[in-house]
Image 1 (spheres, one colour):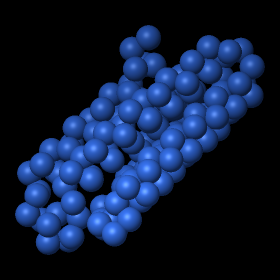
Image 2 (tube, one colour):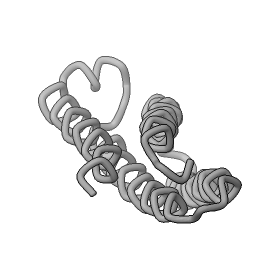
Image 3 (cartoon, rainbow, N blue to C red):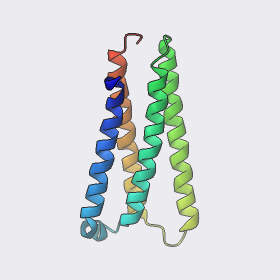
Image 4 (tube, rainbow, N blue to C red):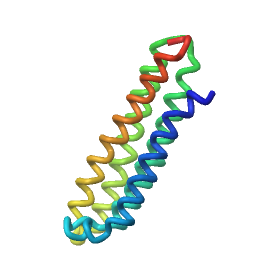
Length: 132
């Protein structure tokens, strides 16, 4: 059971490290033109969506069918993609003229980082799975 929680701890560590950077590096973020609040809220949304996505994929490991894991991972990544797209579209619709593009592009990069960490952790977990 502890091995199944490992991907969640890696994601939690990334979330805490990024928020610590966003809080402590306010002046650096201001020089880059990135809004600290947008980054912190966006990071929180990415973290929550990634946790839900990882839990869906971990649940699919219980199946004896190896294709179930692939479907679980693809399904969870698709859910995460659409949830993040909706969050970005809501942000863009609300702040049309005050849109903070540097923060939005940084969050796009963080989406890729969270997705890479999730998939790599789940792949390692799959190799340890007796059903996989």
